[in-house]
Amino acid sequence: MRKVSQVKALPEYRLALAFDDGVSGTVDLSDLVGKGVFALWCDRSAFEQVRVGPSGELVWGAQIDLCPDALYLKVTGKKPADIFPALSAEPAHA
Image 1 (cartoon, helix red, strand yellow):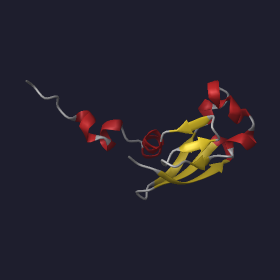
Image 2 (cartoon, rainbow, N blue to C red):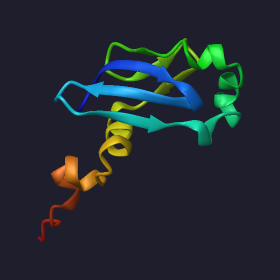
Image 3 (cartoon, rainbow, N blue to C red):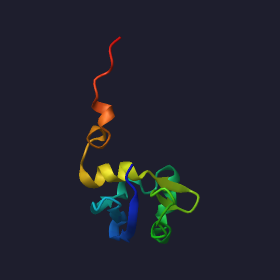
Image 4 (spheres, rainbow, N blue to C red):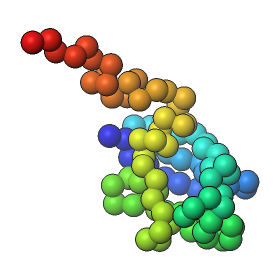
């Protein structure tokens, strides 16, 4: 499992991320603003309160947390099977 090690809020609801394996990049979360729990981000200052949680996830208070693996996929453009090889393994036959 990857962990976010650093985060910085950028303009237009983007985040600059660094991961514990040295990968870094930017993720655009503007498509989530105003939807469900992400209505919190309609207040731009609330979005800027992002921090890294204890498991390497991104958190905004107790209201929102985002999975570091999902963010890693967005930053790298990889598919889940690329970082979780077991997902592409052939099923065992009896």
